[in-house]
Length: 152
Picture 1 (tube, rainbow, N blue to C red):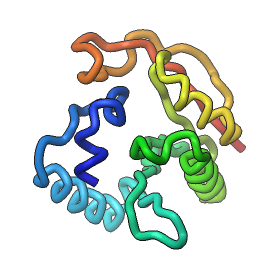
Picture 2: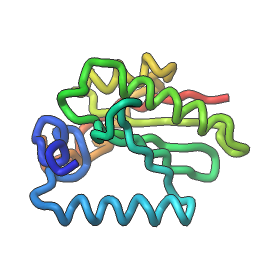
Picture 3: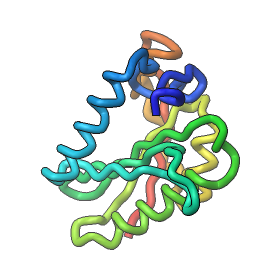
Picture 4: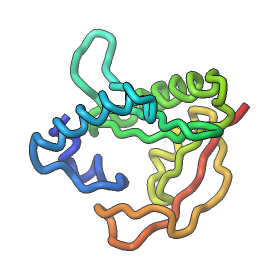
């Protein structure tokens, strides 16, 4: 995990800087366990069926009326459909929950690959959120994002 969490291209559009040491991985895994147990978020690992290598993660963060998604994928797995498959599966799961009325994700307007993932997963671009997210790997200024969603 540290190898892709420290990759400046992988973390380019994330809201936190690249990892610099193993403590990031330990803290991340401890957080994953805690949020799963308390139900505040549901992180999943992305792997191949016949391989134990971690390709990335996708996380569902429930709110009162739906679920926000976040995800990351190591560079060697880009363009192979893995993230579209994971986002689709987690979106379907979230919409099947009793309070899963809406699933959404925001994405930097410059992140065309992530926009394609969300569109292939059946999400619709709803609009532009101006000065919405700070991506410290690109700028100290908040940048515009597109909001994508699927609902039932």
